[in-house]
Length: 112
Image (tube, rainbow, N blue to C red; front, side):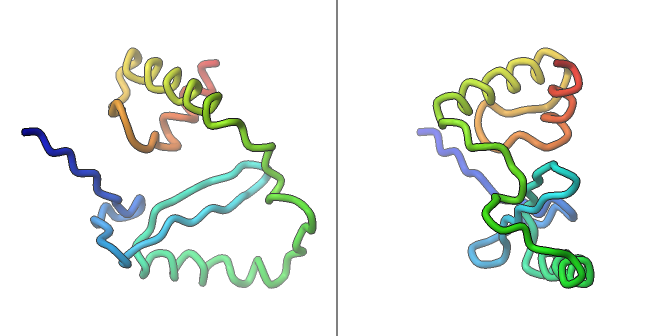
């Protein structure tokens, strides 16, 4: 029998995030969208660091943080497969499943 376990890990400090101990935060900056998995403590640090900028900024009504329309999951799956294949062929450590790091995605985008 084979059992595969997937763990969510804090992208900042590497802490394994158990149930209720972490969250995924999405944010945008200069037209780019980001997603980061953080422990509750690091999520609070991020929110505190951004708070003065958010309170001084303007909310943009009717948009999804300037992001492009969502692609269909079928199209996204094809893109993920292409990124994985490229990354594995170019020396990046990428599993056959799971999240692809922003670093690998950016390297793929630079190459294409």
